[in-house]
Image 1 (cartoon, rainbow, N blue to C red):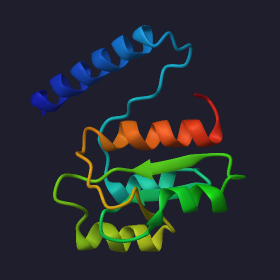
Image 2 (spheres, helix red, strand yellow):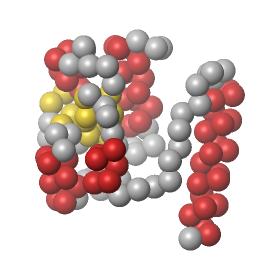
Image 3 (tube, helix red, strand yellow):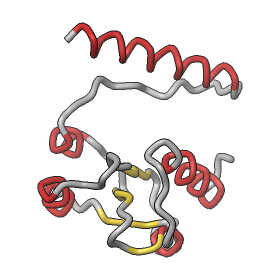
Image 4 (cartoon, helix red, strand yellow):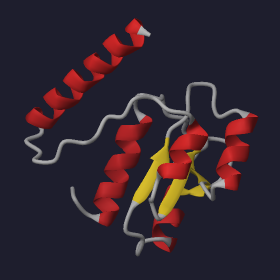
Length: 125
């Protein structure tokens, strides 16, 4: 709807401001929201993870075991966690649960933390 279009335009503005501020030459792609199952069918990432405060292995361990992977996808869930059907979709698409330890991060903070860790460990930071 019209409210959704306005939200996406705002997200694009924020994204471009962030790219300019960080002096990046690459502009990340911002897609319209799509269904989880549809997204997973289109991704070509060689390491597929989802952040899960309840289960999974430490992100550190996952990085050590998969350092040779060429591309990584990490899904960050909504506040309140993933639904049972989300977890079933992950299982069907070989998306593995990881966690950052005993702390539970806010939805806004988790992407920054995970991307920083991955960039530090795998390069590009």
